[in-house]
Amino acid sequence: MDLYPLYNSARIALISSVLVFFLGICLAYYVAKLPALIRGALDVLFTVPLVLPPTVVGYLLLRFIGPHRFIGAFFFENFDIRLTMTWWSTVFATTVVAFPLMYRTTRGAFQSFDRNIEDSARTLGLSDSFIFWRIRLPCCRAGITAGLVLAFARAMGEYGATSMISGYTPGVTATISTTVYNLWRTGSDDLALRWVLLNLGISAVVLLCLNVFESRGRKS
Image 1 (cartoon, rainbow, N blue to C red):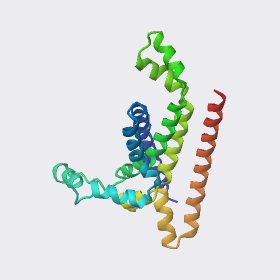
Image 2: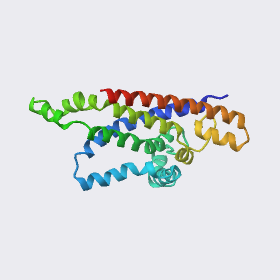
Image 3: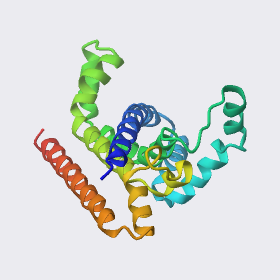
Image 4: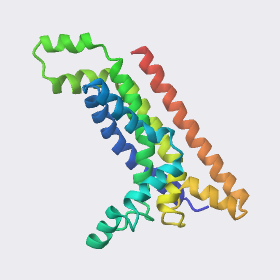
């Protein structure tokens, strides 16, 4: 049993999780300060990948970074870099589909933060950056961590957008999800079942971690 799909899925999910962690926190914090109309429009923009079919997300990405599109052609012609059909190009897809989970969860955690604490800190002369890093983030860590866990799980199990952006090449772009599909398609049901059971085990661990973070959040 070649474990490359597990390794590839894990590194893609980890890279995507790091990206959505910082993007989600940054955008959730600054969008909350914008006027209601602009905030609502950005909320729709940042959240829409959550409700779109993954294949639609993959298609839209190909419209931007495909080899015959402006961005994809620019990188290929000037830097000889293909933005599709590589293992790391999958990161584009997983980041897009996982980001809304991190963004919405983080925004909810920030909205539930007691503003009286923030106002009290300002009366003591504390800077906004100190309040954000030393007060707001620690108070919201349970919600932020839950969003990160959900984003990692979403990136780990992504199939639709991933298959369109990177396809399936054993030892190169194969992930757990694309491997299960191709094993089933070629009649290798026993091996496909092993990957399914492994994926179920990973999902169970992720959900247990999420429950732990949520229980800690309720106690804090």
